Length: 413
Image (cartoon, rainbow, N blue to C red; front, side, top):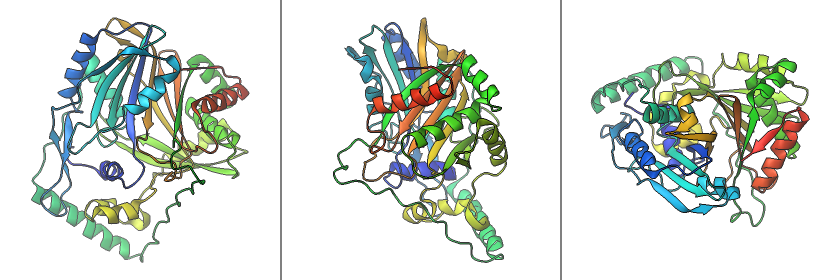
């Protein structure tokens, strides 16, 4: 639709400094340089596609912000001097800077030559504009012309405000018949160690695993590809020194019923103990998907869209954050296997956190993003615990050793 959802506005507040900044990114690796003219064409199609929009504030109290077409964009940027292979993810992390979903541009397409003779291409966009699945739909639309669902027409601010206030006031009155709901308690921010203000808050790794091997191991443990993923991320956290015997995992769920570029997802959670297996997590996840996270006491979540930003931030602080995040983005379109005549040697999707400080860390300590394309699963990892996992090499070693305990071999980027 052409009005921001509750989730859109949560991400918008995080962009304004209220919460953890989140930016989505798709990455492509090729064994040879990609011709700039091809990427200029992709850039043009993205600029006129569904990512070419920005947030416009309403003039009527209670009306939701709306989307407005915005064809301006950062120019396509190509780093011609080759960067080291070991610096690919560091370069990609920097592409999340200076994105603005309100004033624009909220996305960026960039590429860099790599000193192995290849190339890395990054499509990076504010989470306000799209979730992980939506980002793949947007690039599939630009590369292959795959059609997308048309946006719904925008009603006037006055009509939207009337609808929102009716929903909030009516829903709140019904909820209060059962008593005043308990105020949700947000997990406190982790306390930083002395001298950590200047420390990098996150580090990243990307690991590729044979889809045949991954599925074989999942079946041998009575699980699925997804439950093995959740099990792996939980065991990585324990292996990093996490002291608790129970880990709370946040699981995003794609809720779109047609291909749309927006934030069309909800969150659920599972509690994982050291006794759990991929088989038990399979059952837990299946049950969890039927019980999504909702606002407390039946209070309409739309309340967050009619109160001032700082009130909404306090009411929703930490919403969806747990000890780990396990985002299974799923199968990627085969159009992403090549950039024109250039076959891709690797494709990854992930979220990054530009501007996050080591003295303002969220509850989440480890995030994993799983995709499959052709015969390969790609595991993108972000550690948000600089004390336990201080470097990308430490994160890569942690992932490879945890995979090895399951009988899996991974190839790191």
